[in-house]
Image: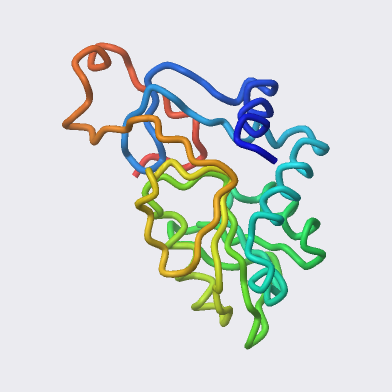
Length: 194
């Protein structure tokens, strides 16, 4: 799937939003990718997951025994990646603020895990998810996301593959441009306020 085809999927589902947004990373942006919208159609979600799975290096793909994603944003794409790879998918969640496996999910010693996100900006949630997966006994051998918003700078400690890189500018709260300062920031993501 080419970049323009991926963007067409986001546009067709009205998942590419414009305004003033507060991202889960704490940074501000004039663009927001509502991946829940692009993934709400099962056929579209499946196409995107197949394309993302195909983008993984073949040798790496063969080693993966489990897919684990962080809730909430990664749940659907993680499930679809499990389907695309023909392996089990599960998720970590934050019942008390720290990611952990729950709901009877478990990893076996030696499980080679692909950690899958919807969007990566700073990599904070990804690194937290990787830490939880490793604490549960899995070995994270790669990470993947539909969208890399990091500008190619994210460092997760494992090979990282994204279906598309979108480099919309983001700003720290103290650096928000003047033209946005009088517009309230909308927080459409799933992470609760800290």
